[in-house]
Image (cartoon, rainbow, N blue to C red):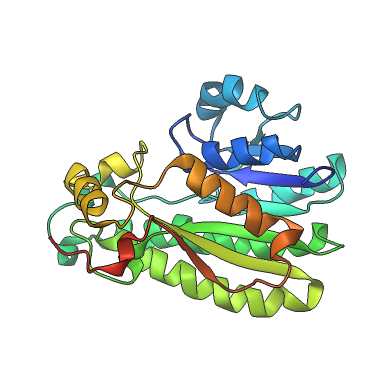
Length: 254
C-alpha cells in the first residue's frame, strides 16, 4: 500500500472498526485522509488521527445535501487523487434497535437508509473523478442482512440494500478499473454495536457457535480490508467477504 492514498470515513474512537482498518493500512505505509461529521467529533478523534495521518480531518455530514460533493472537491484541490476509500458509516436511532421491527418509525427508516446506504452510492459517484488510475472501495455490512438477528431491525434492511448497492456499483465502476466490495464482519464490540438490544447475548452466542470459538477482532477485519484495498485482490469486485470466524455456518436465532 506504500504510495497509495485513501479516505477513511467513519473513525469514531479506538474501538471502531475503522480504527482497526486504519492500523492495518498504516502498517502497510498507506497515506490516509479522515472525515468527521462535526467539529465536535473532529476534536474527539484528532489525537487518534494524528497517529495515522499528517492530513487535516475533513468535515462531512453525509446526511446533508452537498457535503459529500464538497468533500471530494476539497480532496481534489488539495491532493488530486485517491486510490482507495473505506466507508464505515451507519446509523439508526438506538431506541429502535430493540423490540419489534414493525415499530420502526418512518423518519428513522429513511434516515437509516440515507446514512447507511445512500451515502455509499454518493461516495462512489464522486470517487470516480479522483480514481483516474483505478481504485478500490470497501464498505462494512453485517450478517443481519441475510438472517434474522434479534433487535437488529431497520439496520438489517439498510445493510441488505447496501450489499445490493455494492453489486450494482461494481458493475457501474468496473469499466473505470474501480473495484467495489463489502466486508460482512461478525459481531464486534464497538460503541455503535452497543446500541443494539441484548448485544452481549449476540456476542456470546456467536463466540460459542464459531468453529474458532472466539469473536472477530478489529485486526481480523483490518487485515481483510487491507487485502481488498490492495492490488493483491485485483480480480475481486462486487463481493461480500465474510470475516466472522466461521460463525455464519449455523443459523443466528437464539
